[in-house]
Image (cartoon, rainbow, N blue to C red; front, side, top):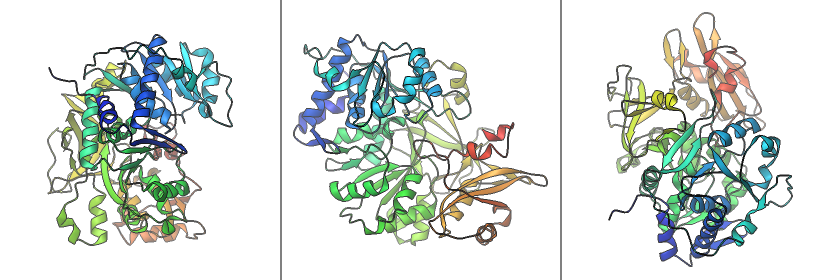
Length: 529
């Protein structure tokens, strides 16, 4: 009899073969795989005793703590569906998601209960479980998490038959242009994505994985499953704090982590980065926005990180491309290597088929020039958007998921994103990639962070504008930035305006929110979205 493909089974394997190995480190707490397994089982029993059954939906709003890890296994192993929530969302968005997802229960960290307190009377939750946090006190009528699992019925786990095609999680998109959409991800899709994570990031038994990436974001890109599968060690991180992360590198000999380019940028620009004593060379997967080649080079030179560029979307579980590093690349200069590593790369082994197509739906030439949209199909694509057949039909056409990302394909098959369709700048009929301009800006020594957007122009229709966060104590003018860019790229691609700001708007996962930067320039226009 065939066993269903589900990442939940990896916990069983880990408890069987690594019972006394440290599974989870969360600040001063440590749990072996046997202890972690017992805690997740206790959670399942408590949920079952509370009336939760296979197919029920449970919303979870927790940072990267051992409680969040326990929820992934404790909820999903009994066939219930986990709905991870972004704890940085406004109360209005949280109300919509909790209602739209049909969640019967909420598990929430006490630090993030304030928005729930505002909307609690509008929700019809059967029960709220609260993870207590020192220094915070909530008015929510909830049950303490530890008491909840401690007093669970001890009759054993309920027998649940898992279908690999049933839902494992519903992960909501950020909803920047409309209401958030619930991405339906299955047991099989998560299993295949995690298999890619294990294989292409080289996850091994001795790995110590630091959860810098929010676990609520596409299930930690699969990290919540992959590390357990190999018997590695999860190191939890409540919030992204660069100095603390650098300490953890040395304290726990971190070997693997994931994060958006903004997190990489925060690490390499921390004053203590060059002083950090890193005994091992950690592998770091980055995605979420196209990383500048200059940033990759800094990460490798300053911190000794072995950068691995991956690409995907929540709708694809998320990985569909990775930058495969070949021995032949080692002979190239550091600059050339960084440029190659900035490409999104090729299909992963287990995800299915991905390619770039033109407006006629034909694959673009492998010449690094012809622009098209990335589309994909196969093992990791979502089942669709929850209760939204229209948006599902828009996204999945003729069996292919359309990403909305514009890219080229090089002669070796490596795909490189030029821009999001909505971020492409069309000036005087010429296409300008905002990411290309940003890549040049990151080469300037005074630039800490940069975002490039289109602004209206009477003559050209629109032109590039750079919004820049400068390095501490840096003094550089708008004209100097424009001249720098014009010296390194075609003049029509260079910014015509530069604005210096204290910070750039980002999502909880570190993605730039360019639509917020466009708002003041394109009010009432679709260009804002």
